[in-house]
Length: 140
Length: 115
Image (cartoon, rainbow over all chains, first blue to last red; front, side, top):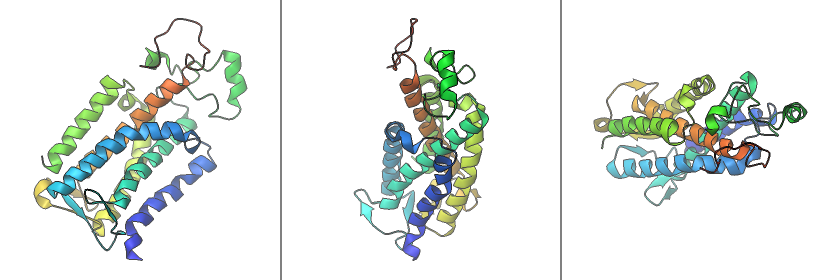
């Protein structure tokens, strides 16, 4: 079982954050194309960083607490998944805080990202600045 | 470059990206810091398990030395850079996708949202 330590942690992250999508309906999984686009810079930079760190011997990975499946460059498959799972959970956290507090995150609310407010938004004229002036500064 | 030097560089680079490249200014927003506080709590937990159980083992010569919950201090910088880059990119992608111009709803003159 111990070879599933790292993979289990990643799975735990997904399980713990799942209610944000399922119950709080933050619509992050629902916007998966945007999510992929947003994760791309982080994924590229940090995978390169890890490849460098492995090559330089900055750190190494247990052969017994991982599946020990190494991809080119010696990066464990779990580590690659880490750079997808953690950003996904981070975005879920941000969207959850945004939804609960209503605070500005620098972009207009998606037309479909909160129940009940669609009609209200349409009345105000599309969704410009729907969330406390958001979009105004960001669009400049 | 040592892990320490890279970690500091990454934090500076990400701040530049957030403030000057995307201009998403996530690090100026309360919503970001509340989310980050939640994320960093779970990061310390997960990192603690990863390093406490020796899933990841660091070369002492490339880190400063101090550790928080088994993990090198540098991991906090690594995590901050990673999370901030992700959330700033997410904001940039949504800003572009949600602006009225893109949805054909704007009527006044505004700068292209495709930049």
